[in-house]
Amino acid sequence: MGSLDFPVWRFFPSTNEEQSMRNPRPESSTRTLLGALVCAASFAAGCGPEGAYPMEGEGAALGVTEKEVVYGTDDRQDVYAHPDATLRTRAQESTVALMNPSDYDASNPNDVAFTGSTLGSARNLCSTERFRDDPTSAFCSGTLIDDDLVLTAGHCITSASACSNTRFVFNYYRTAAGALQTVTTQDIYSCASIVAREQGTVNGQNLDFAVIRLDRPATPRFTPAPVRAGNTAMSGGQNVAVIGCGSGVPFKIDSGGSVRDARASTLDFFVASTDTFGGNSGSGVYETDGYTVAGILVRGETDYVSSGSCTVVNTCSESGCRGEDITYIYPAISAFCAATNNGSTRLCGDLPPPPPPPADSYTYNASNTNSAQQNTVNKTLTLNAGDEVEVGTCGLTGATASGDTYLRFFDGASSEVASNDDSCGGRASYIKYTVATAGSYEIRAGCYSSGSCGGTVVWKVTPGSGGGGGTSGSFDFNASNTNSAQQNTINQDVTLSAGQVLDVGTCGVAGASATGDTYLRLYGPAGSQVASNDDSCSLASRITYTVPAGAGGTYQIRVGCYSGNSCSGTAAYTIQ
Image: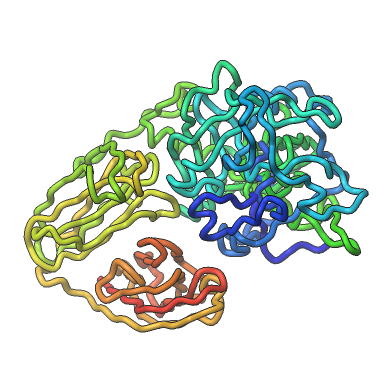
C-alpha cells in the first residue's frame, strides 16, 4: 500500500487538559486507538531517505485519527509468548502504560480492573484480526530508565496539568491466552514533574521526548532498562524491538523491525519497520544485540484500513510505506543531565560535568506560583532606553529548565512589559524585549499554573543607541481553515539584512493581539520555512529570528490558525 503524505502520531489522545484542547478523546466506548500505540515500549529502527519525513507538527494534527500498521509479517507477540527471555523481562520489569485514572477501576486495590473497551469494539475490527478481545486502556507507553524516572514521548505529556492527570501502570501484560497479570495499586504511579521535555525542532534537530519523575521510586519492585551510551547513529538494517501498548492494548513485543534510515547527519530520530500502532508513542525502542533503549517511538504510518463493513490492520511490505519514526535517546538523556546537574549516576555517569552557569544568571526552584504571579524568584536589572534584553530558561547559553517554567518581566512602575510560558519547542521560557524607558526592571521566574519547576535563568543585554531604533509595523488578519498556517494565510513581506533580528507576534510585541488559536510561519528568500510558532503567550504566537550571514533578502510572514480553526487579530513586528 502506498504511504501517506504525512505521519500519524503514535498516541491515544487523553483527557489531560492540553491534550483535550488539541486532541478531543472519544468516549471509552467509541474512542479511537490513537494513544494505544504510545504506551508501547518500542524497539525501533530508522526510516527512509533523509528529509523525506515532515517535521514534527508540520503534517497531521494531533487530533488526526491514528491507525495501526504492520510491515511484512505481523511480528507482534504477547509477553508470555515471545521466545526472547530478555525482552520478556524488559516488558515485565521496565515497561509502563500511560493511562488516565478513568481508564481503570482500583476499587479493589489488590486487583485493578481495566475499563477500556475491547480492541475489536473500539476499532470495529473484522473477525480475522488479532487481539480483538484485548482492553484498550492505555494512551501512550513509556520505559523506566532510573529509580523514579520514565522516558516517553514529549507529545504524550505536554504540561503540568497533563502530568497530574497521567498514571504510569506496570504489569499491563498477558500471562497466558485470555489471562492478564494481576495489577495492584502498588503497580500504579503518578507523575510528580516533567524533568526534561522537547517537542519540536531545536538547533536543527526534530525532537520529541519527555523524562518524567514519578511520585515515588519504582525500584526495587521494578527494574530500569539500560540505555544506549553515546551519540552515534544506528546502523542501516540493524534489528530493533519495540515493547508497548499499540492501540492501547496490553504490552506487545515486536522484535522483527529493522532500521531503514539512521539520519546520521542530524541524530534526531531514525526510521524503522516496526509493527507499531497508536498508543505505542513513547515506547522504548531497543537494540536487540545489547537490549539497550536506543530511542522513543513517536510517529508512523496509518494503522487500520477499511475492509467492507469492518477494519483490518494496514499491511505494508517490509520496505514499503513511510516507516516509523524513533527519537534517538541521547538528546533526552543529555537534556535531563543538563537540567539536573548530572542528577543520575546511572544516566549521567559517562557525561562530562555541565559547565558552570554564566555570570549573568541565577538558579531557582519554585512551586505554586500561579504562572509566575506569586512565590516567584526575582532579579533586578538596570537598563537603558534602546537596550535589547533577552531572558530565558532556554534559548541562551547556560539556560536550563526542569518542569514547565514561566517568566514575566516588569518595569520600574511594576507594570508587566513581557511574559512567556512555552518557548524553544518545549516548556521552557524565553523573552526578548527592547527597553523603552531607562530604569530598573525585574525578572520574575515561576512555573506554569500551580506546578513545581526550576532551572537556570540567563539574561543577555545588547546595548542600544539610546532611542530604540529599528523599524516596526503591523497588519490585521482574519483567517480560517489554514491547516496550521499552511494555506489561506494572511501574508506580509519584510526586507531583512544579515544580522538583523525580526520579532513578530500576535502577542508579546507592541500592538499585537489575537482572538483564537493563531499560528505563525516565517519563510526566507528562497521560499523555504525558516521558523514557526504555534503557542507562545497562551494560544497566541511569536517568532524571534536572527538573519544568518549571507541570508538577507525578502522574507514573508504568514499568519494563520491552528488546524482548521478560525482566528483573528493584529500581527505586529519589529526589526532591529
